Image (cartoon, rainbow, N blue to C red):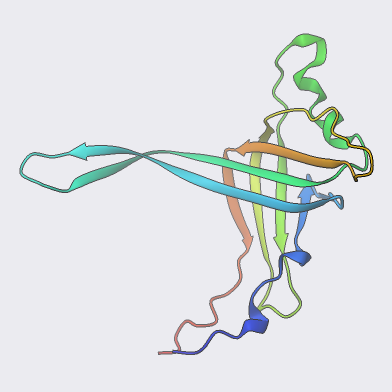
Length: 152
């Protein structure tokens, strides 16, 4: 088995997030995951607890620095006239590092942000911006190839 080449590990400093194709330069951290929802099945004559997948739930966060009011106005329809209006968008995460075996892009579809961050500041500090979201589907756009396949 080949040893890990530490230069090929991916450095998150080269990550980027895009909202509907536009690079959100002020965000420097992103996380997205899919929770596999299961139901336990207890069968007679079997000591094992079996599991049935019953659903999927996509959640994530983006965070960085407040530069413009873009993210507030993107979600503004949620509070317009005190009505609940669903605003959906698409996010693409790009993980890139010039020393890695390639880059990876993942598209998150039907993204709905969980809140509007209207104000967040403290004297002497840069204003942060963090937004949690849910998504309903995802698609790998550019997976990094497994260079260890077929090496025996």
